[in-house]
Length: 321
Image 1 (cartoon, rainbow, N blue to C red):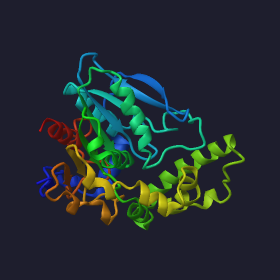
Image 2 (tube, helix red, strand yellow):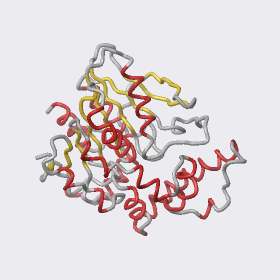
Image 3 (cartoon, rainbow, N blue to C red):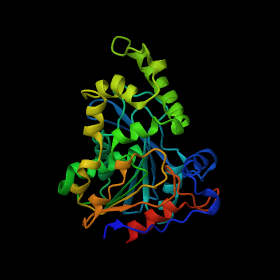
Image 4 (cartoon, one colour):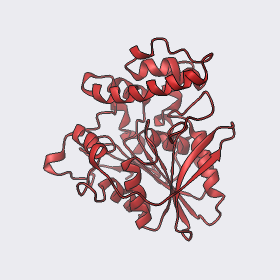
């Protein structure tokens, strides 16, 4: 039954296009920003992570929200989800990946799709607050892959307080997504990603001139090129293919041992064919997979422009079920 064959998501007639779902919320949605406290924690390797903590001081349940590639804790999809969860009595922790909080991280490395040790550091910090009896893990795009890989790697060893997980628009297979985004139809998205990543590498090269060579950086236009020259060597991988293979959550989805919902839209322009793990979900007692026909990448628009989105409604529904 965890393979959900018919999704409840039904977009309006005018917004069925995957690109519209992907671009319009990012460009125009402005949900109310929850009041938060910015907290900085140190990582075991002497770096830092910044997280935005919203709490009423009484809740016994908390949701940890993980953003996507080159995102941050103030993204509209993070803020919309945080507000929806807060309305249901959840505390929320929206954390920023290394170098994504507005300040460069200390080390040569930054973040990547398989850096589950950073999610573990956030979870360890949150669980120091002993009042929390339930922890939900919510992830979007890269943050979704990170979340599901974390749960799959741990399997039955996951902390019993980690209650459920919901992820959206998740690149379960990084290789197929890299090739998908390199297609001409996705040139706009690649241009935006590469603009941010080039800037990040130039800044790192200034701080670590003897360790980062940016020769040819301006001529890189795909993840295959960037991951081969930067992501892989800076994080201990043997190349782009080694990074993609070892960091994708797809191989470990069947090892998940808490209720986990993955929602990937069929018209998501970012996702390759291997990102729709139906066979992994069939008859699985914990891993749920839902594939609406529409929704784009981190879209799933609801009441336009500032109301609750379907992704937020669906998350609350799953956490309550």
